[in-house]
Length: 419
Image 1 (spheres, rainbow, N blue to C red):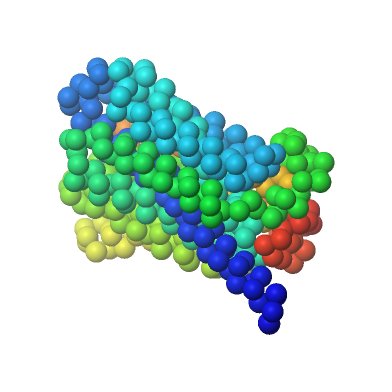
Image 2 (tube, helix red, strand yellow):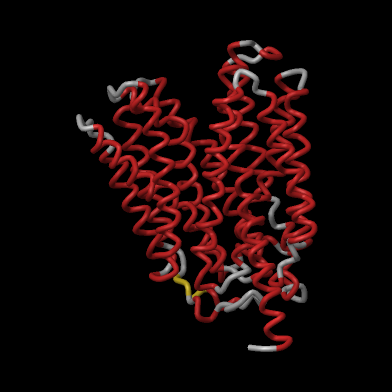
């Protein structure tokens, strides 16, 4: 390849590299935000900052997730106005109100700032995953989705490490989150072009109708991924919130219980790398079914107390491999199953419904804790949730990736679903 074609290929490779890095960093912001509030809540309550109590902290945590759910449901705007514009506006919104959190003069204002920041953040993840998926052939989208989602867990780790260094001085954690988002804005403006898939789909009459995902040709798939996403994020947030408590109730010491949470998230990163590669080779739907089924079995096994620390660590590690990446495989499936003109809509609504699971998961598990039934029934509950997620994904249409757009110039061929 020589001349203009070679030059064009080099330019496209550079753009794809920047796209991958920037989308990964955008997803990292959400991972950072996932941990930051939980890391500072004990300090806020202990020092009664602006009147914080356990009830106030619960309100702040819940309203944050509500904001993210609203923002995710607003991702269809990316199908109307473009991926790039939505990312710029949503990151600016998240950054401004995250940096403003330390200035809140009451628990109510604190919650409002977290709500608005969450709305901005909620639109980021599905839009970034949509954009990233459109930079690769359909046969590589599962890996593109899972590798991008490693940024989520990286952000969570960064937030945890910073909290260890800064708390009880918690305010810098929010300043750093806001500054990180503001630093991304000029890079996105300069280095992230509009998705070619979006530009090619502009002439399609479906692009402005979010309800198209409920049309007869998509309905079965839409309902399946919505239920699967709800169950998947219920597992992710439920386990991240209550695993240490469940393990304490099982008779393990506090040090072991906290270590297991870290082990679970290490497994999540490993699972993302394995799941994406396998899904591209064997199919996203079959891989998701295996992942949810394995998660159900492993979560049930965690109800059995073991005396070997090594065996327990191994079991939790493998559980993390399957539990967290099962949810991401649903996102990967959505990027393949819907054409470009409604892809951000489909992914945003799937993520938005999933966020409801993120709210209900910790709440339902908390009820079990209050009732004194968290162990072993918490693990049985999570196993049942994974089983429902598997059944939901069993109902979705199979993918025919050979008929989907093969390159960056995504034309949004609606033949991605084989009914």
